[in-house]
Each structure stands twice: as structure tokens, then as C-alpha cells.
Length: 460
Image 1 (cartoon, rainbow, N blue to C red):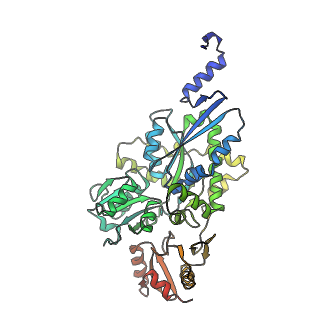
Image 2: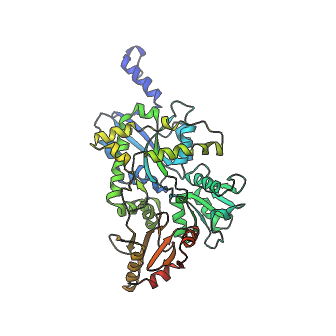
Image 3: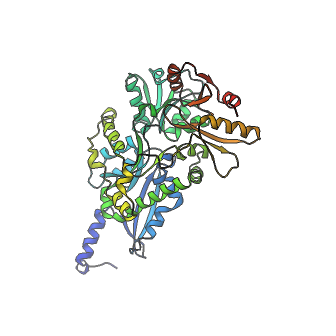
């Protein structure tokens, strides 16, 4: 039955106009209005799990939306991508409402979405960060003779242009005095393509974001050449939403941020279970997920720390280095208003958490994960970890994974993939050969030993 225009009330006409302006996010399902929210996420970028993979698996967003009881129904659609670029493209097309991605992709997102008022985005929360930049790394083949980033001059390097991994590569090469454009040949490839290219010898190195470097090293397909923590510049991932959508449906953004905090709390309280959940949904090895999501790994904290925003502003010139991008006003792009409101609703002190830069899930001096164990075993220091591994081997127990913090930069890494130095009664692990050489230059008494040698020789 068709409605005559004269029979439509002023309120109904206004509602229809609002519906049109909001990109038809309300749908009549016969049982009331349904509000749709489309979430763009990267399942394998495990630094965003609290706004993606883990959040989806635990159903926290759907649970929060169900509790609204405002007469509407909510339909959540999850769209999974390998990198942030396609999420941004979909947001420009007004087809994704909320997305998560790394810092450099966030810059591109803010710049690309400015032209269309309904596509304009705002940066509303952080998912996880590393204060020194250890979430991005450069890896080379296991038999590579390269010892430092300088050895990549003139070589082919695979990365995803516009990604956090690419941003780290640009900074690392620049600091080494190598022109990122003319000093190397950059191949713009998706992470999995780059991994295959490295394995087949088509490229000399791969520069990528979590969890790809750790995965490739864990699978013995690569070794670590450059730890992003050497830059000592924070790197992070975060959440953006289309301003127009958030204006039309502020309750959805509120529910999303509430759910993100729920997921963040869960990963703090149940890190091993969270890692197992993410591994199940992504196909990534649990040991790799736990490398980053475990104690002492990624700092999962939703607040945009001042140090992160300062680093974010320092990254802006990167936009001009890769193409013709519109200038981005970071102060206008970053808008924690909705997050502040969520903290208020939960009775939490936003300013206190904003000022706190300690990792909410601090790591010990190492961590041992035995096969069949329901929990991991924290240890006081790397030398104690070696003793624990030695004891486990003596008892016939299989070590599933062992983690240690790099002695120079603090990066959480696989103990059996680390490079070890024996100095006096102490064993020190490092992520890269360059780090080892820096230590030995200051401590000539140190001696390089293999992991197995260190386990065998350490005193019980």
C-alpha cells in the first residue's frame, strides 16, 4: 500500500530525511527498525584484537547493543582485511562505519576521508601500542649475511606501502642514511605475498607489522634483522569511526567503546585464553599470538597517550613521502570525547589512565610455556628461564614456547630465536645481531653462545 505524501507527519518526513542522510543505516525488518553497523578489522593484525578478532569472538559488542533496550535492533557485520588500506577505501565509500588499523594507515585514513563530509573519520581510541616501536620489524632469510639495516642498501624489500611496517622501514632506512626511494627497491606486497617472496629468494627482506615478523621467524622462514624498537618511537594501532555515523548513532559508538574495554579487560585477566581464542579464529599459532598478546608484549590500553599523539604528529610528513595526500590536523582528527564519556559511565578515571604509561600486563624476566600445561611459568630473568628450560628437558617435558625480553630494548621475543651472550654468571638475550655487537663493544668480556649451548651450560 502506498502512502500519500499528505498523510506523512512532519516528524515522519524528518525521520526519512535523517535516514537518507545517514546512508540508510536503518532498515525496516517488519519487527521494528534495525540499525546496521559495519566493522572493518584485520584478524591477523593481533595488535587490534580488542577491536577486532577477540572482540568478535567474545561477542562483547553484540551483548552491549542488546542491552540498550531502546526499541531498535542492531545488526553487526564484520569485514576482515589483511591491511588498513581497504578499510579506509570502504570508509571513503561510506560502507564501513568503524575500523581499526595501525598508526601510518590511520594517517592515510584521516587524510583520505576529509574530502567527503559523510566519510570524514575521527580517531576515537587506541587498541594497543609499544612505547619504543617494537611492533614492526624487518626480517631476512635464515641464511642471509645481512647484519644490520645498512646491509639492505640496493636490495629488494617487500612491504605493504602505507602500512605501519612500511613506515618503520622508511624511518629505519632514513636513519641509516639510505634513501627509502632510491637507495632500495620497495615492492608493495601484502604480508603473505612478501613472506612467500622472501622464502623463494625474490626479495632480500620483508618489513611488516605484527604478527608477520614473529610468525615468519617462528616458522623458521626468517630471522630478525631490525627491531623497530631501535627507533625508540612509539607505534600503535587504533580505532576510527565515520563522524556522520557516530553523530547519527552515538549509542553504537558508545557500545563499541564499552565492548572494546570489555575485551581489553579480558586480555589482561585471561591472556593465555585470549591468545588461544585469537589463534583459533585466525589460524595463527598460539605461540605467536601469545608472543605479542602475552605479559610484557603489547600494551593494550584504549587511551590515546600524549606520547602516542606526539609521535603521530611526527609521522605526518610520511604522507607526503608516499603520495599526494591532503594535510591532516591531528588535533582535530583525534577525538576522545566519546571515550571520556564511556569512562564516566563506568566510574573510571580517564585522566589518571591517560597519564599512566605502564604496561597494564607487565612481563617478568621471562616466561615458560610447557606442553600440556594449563598456565605459563613466569621467571625472574633470562638466566632463570634457561635454568627452567634445562630442568624441563631433564624431566622429559616438552617446551611449547619460551619468551624473554631483549636485554637492550626490552622487546619480548622467542628465547630459542634470540641471540645469546654469556657474560660472567649472566646470560643475556638479544633480538638482533646489531644489538649483540653494540653490547660486545661495551662489554668485551661477553661471549656469543647458541641457545642450546646456553641451556646446557647454565648452572642449576
